[in-house]
Amino acid sequence: METDLLRYGVDMLDLYRGGLSYRRVCALVTYLPDDAAVWRVLNPRGAWTRADLLASVTERRITALWATVASALGQEITDAQLADPIEAFTATATASPARTAPAGTGDPELKSLREIAVWMRNG
Figure 1 (cartoon, rainbow, N blue to C red):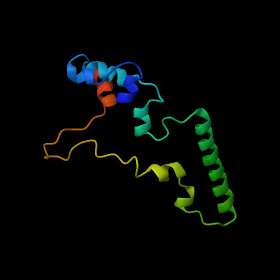
Figure 2: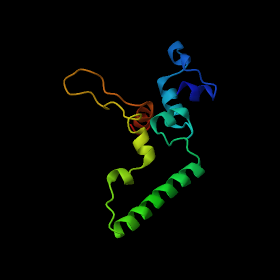
Figure 3: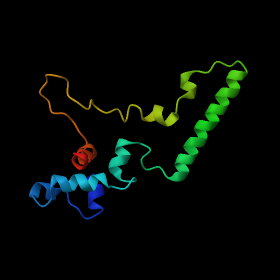
């Protein structure tokens, strides 16, 4: 996120120096562009171009077509054969911790800056 904000001339250290408020950070994060590094971390497909997305959709359609023909010919289709290769590859890399702490632990609830920004706007 710091890299994304530096791209627009905002230094995260100003948050600790008193020159930047949490409200301003939330507003900036809320309106970061879709290709921002912070969204790529949260979503592996966040920085895909339109061509990348179309290629992925085409691959999924071809897989569905293949599965239809294969099952019509009596072939047994497994879930692994139908799985999205990108999802399978990134499933462990994008596994996130629980969003809320277990009851009674006294640990604070975890919220992303984007969730906080949306909450502040709607709040």
